[in-house]
Image (cartoon, protein in one colour):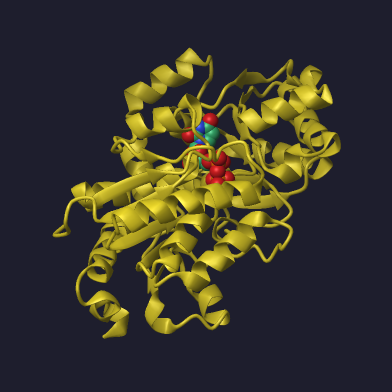
Amino acid sequence: MCLPPSSVAVVLGTRPELVKLAPLIHELGDATRLVHTGQHWDEAMSGRFLRDLDLPRPELLTGVGGRPRAGQIAQSLGQLDAAFAEDRPAAVVVQGDTNATLAGALAANAREIPLVHVEAGLRSFDRAMPEEHNRVMVDHVSDLLCAATGENVANLRAESLAEDRIELTGNTVVEVVRRQLPDGAARAALLAAHGLRPDAYVLATVHRPENTDTAEALGAVLAELDRIARAGTPVLFPMHPRTRAAVERFGLDGLLERLAVTGPVGYGDFLGLACHAALLVSDSGGVQEECTVLGRPLLVVRRSTERPEAVAAGFAALVRPGEELGTLARAWLSDTPERLARLAATPSPYGDGLASARIAALTAALAGPAGRQALPSAA
Ligand code: UDP
């Protein structure tokens, strides 16, 4: 990459951003200036991911984690503005829809620094989700919108975003999964360490407010996982810190007794475990993409999704917590071999594994002297 060292600020603050931006940061090489807002800053959610994904040491903002949304955005924005005033980047890159994404975007916008949004154009059309507001706002101030799929491009066009700002790049998830998935021997050892057999267990994660904010919703998810485990299929449940706090707050510990509960696991381990699960159950955004690369079925415990591609391609289905989750889980587990064979033959809708190379080249063009004029769609 022929860009000056540390000239592209990559702003992030959470686990999924570290995962999806890792291949782009590697492409940008020493042009990367990594800034972590500290939104999720601890060993399990960030430290381990920085190391395992071989990422450079970030500049770390202070006083952001643990605040309500406006406080996180305000704290991050003030510090980013000061950092960009002192040392102006040639471009700023953000990814996804977190508070860190929005703060990075507003900081770039305030100082008229070219802004790249990776994973532009996702829409759940669910205005109750703060992430939906974050992604809409970020798309509208970005100079380069890197859309992962044709559906994402269509969403941007429907909001009248200028055609010359939109590029169809694919999603960096494809290459990060391919690179980080442990090899067969390591996966076999991982499953053995958890006492699991391939294609014979459920891997579950939940952490979104819609599933953890009330005892009813969280209780309904956990009761169905408990029922699956009682029926004889092991359920591995790496618990997000927010979910652990909610279980304690609502006194739902009893529903965990039959589940194999761990803390959040490292990325390679998560992929290794997901790669051999008979069924994934999750409300995560990233897992909806990863399941298409790994060829595994996923029940998405959400009322809406900004990623309809996995559902359309037959990898995933949206379910409500409670009976609907249990009924579909039992149905899908009853035809595991046929389902896995079908999914193994279905291509991922998220691209060809070259998204990060495309985004890096586009970012370099935008950061160069010709700016937007150097982008292919502006020609
Ligand atoms: N993940 C992980 N360890 C875990 C659970 C999830 O590495 O114990 C990964 C998962 O593979 C995905 C990312 O974390 O890439 C998703 O993060 P999260 O669910 O926090 O955010 P979302 O994707 O919903 O924005």
